[in-house]
Image 1 (spheres, rainbow, N blue to C red):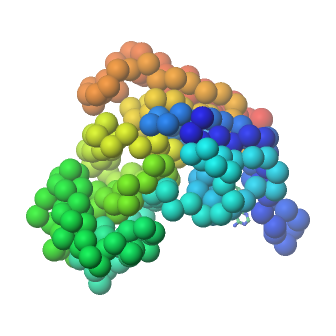
Image 2: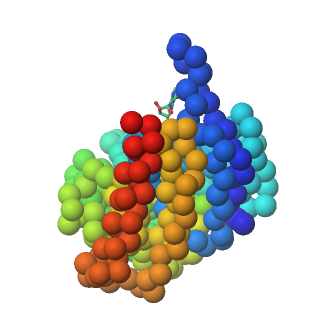
Amino acid sequence: MFVSLDGVRLAYPSDYGEVLALDGLTMGIEEGEFAAVVGPSGCGKSSLMRLATGLHLPQSGAIRVADKPVTGPLSITGMAFQNPSLLPWRTTLANVMLPLEIVRPHRRRLKHERTAYTQKAEDLLSLVGLEGFGARFPWQLSGGMQQRANLCRALIHDPVLLMLDEPFGALDAFTREELWAVMQDLHAQKRFTVILVTHDLREAIYLADKIFVMSARPGRIISEHRVPFPRPRPMDITYEREFVDLVQELRGEIADARKEVA
Ligand SMILES: Nc1ncnc2c1ncn2[C@@H]1O[C@H](COP(=O)(O)OP(=O)(O)OP(=O)(O)O)[C@@H](O)[C@H]1O
């Protein structure tokens, strides 16, 4: 397994005793696989992301990424969240190139290979439909365009693992679907491993190879579904019977998981 979490427990300290976020969580993702994680609100999905990127360490259990135990923040990962958080005083291109100023070995190479790196950033921008927008500032872009740039920034250092935490959650339905298609193309082209956390079951099924359903807090994996639809997936597939049935099945599992704590 390229990413594995085995019997993981994560508790946060709080004034009222500890908050147990995850307990006995076990999951595995193969290299190049697109995984989605769905579950009831507050079940620990974001906590899971922080564990897989080494931003938090578990109290017990084992986490491995790319054959190594995770012992601290991993620079081989890229991340994108709901809020694109682009720096307003930097152009779009300069925002996309920001990780190169931080992540080794790019940091060292950037000075001498700036032209090649700039080309790489521009190539990524055109791949997501932002050709010619590199010189604009983020506040001159629409929300959907900002999120496209945000994806480029998450990918500029060629991460082997991309973590997406509700990246399309704040967008209108049309823009969101456009971004699903962009994401599908990026994954087909670059073949990185992905963990997508989402509340949107259509999004999970459209994009993922494998879907994990989490229990209510403390979160653990209660089921795993392989998505059977061949790629590339046209958007119309989301209205087909088999697709809608899978949405309903997942919805039912999450409703049951919520009842357990109610
Ligand atoms: N830093 C923290 N300190 C204390 N408790 C925390 C912290 N971060 C998260 N929690 C708690 O841990 C639990 C899991 O939080 P997390 O954000 O991982 O869930 P989530 O599934 O991503 O939530 P949502 O569905 O609302 O996005 C929640 O009860 C949350 O209140």
